[in-house]
Image (tube, rainbow, N blue to C red; front, top):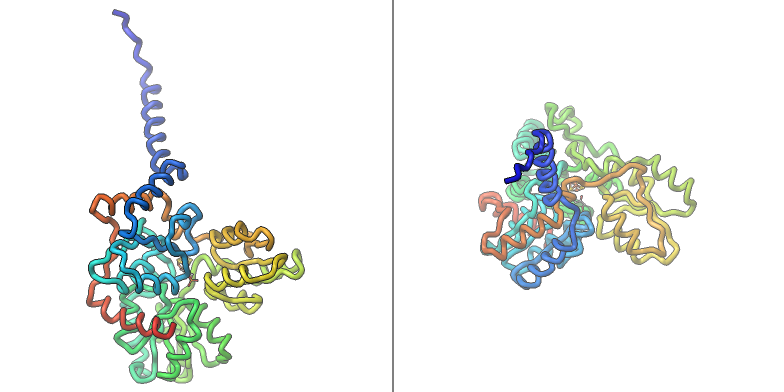
Length: 379
Ligand code: 13P
Ligand code: SF4
């Protein structure tokens, strides 16, 4: 018998490492035609048993599988209307929560990667908002004179808070209409968690600076004096989107110098300085419509998430589209949903054990639904 010499120990270790690397590569590999093919096949097999909703910030290879794409408002409206027993939400956690609140108990809402959160939504929690309400009560009677308005980018608990206190939810598409409604009911608005959407909308409505105050949840009375609170018509929570805050007005100046005639489009989560310099401010859906309806040859520099801007660039080769910032502003949590996670979510449904289900307890879902229904009625 010929004795095969054993490879030295470090070679064995290298083989083991190479094997582990190859297994990792398989797990995290960029989407292969194989996985895309499997997604197509399972989706076809499941037919009407599954509806895939995709937010505009999703990556290309995921949005390609969405039955419906949209901004936060459109996707919430679609969730409220569907009878599909399984809804895969390619978006972030608050969106899946909203869909669960608006669908029946027998419908499953699935977030392919449960770690897909939203840093802005995390900037206001139930305890902080309840404390704010108590502190306001030291100065005014908030239940009589303040309408709480939460941006849809918030936890279900905060939507429930609004439902319990005569308040409402808004999105970046309908913030103006919602704030008009809120001010018709009570003289003041407490707007959370995004300072910028509240401020930009109020500025566009002609609300003067002296009628707005900022509420810092880490300061007593939010960092305000009692007379500031009595005077204010709009109390803005000090929260922001870590992606949209990266755009600067200097970026718009540089673009205009380099591309005379270019139109600057901005999402209202950008700072006031950026929105004031922009030619058009709107939600993701409004930005898409604006670019689509513009005549060929129009050029745009856009201040919103990178995946959407890249998609617009590809879809409109006759209209030059630029990203407003010289640095990459991408929502890393939206990016978490990849074809592998989508495939796993579909396979779990096929196998009768839907995983990563998002459920909101009825104690919050009931009052949150009230605040969402008020919004959906206003459109
Ligand atoms: P819209 O989808 O309302 O435009 O909002 C963008 C966003 O940041 C979603 O998280
Ligand atoms: Fe949240 Fe900003 Fe990402 Fe939207 S883009 S999900 S607001 S972190």
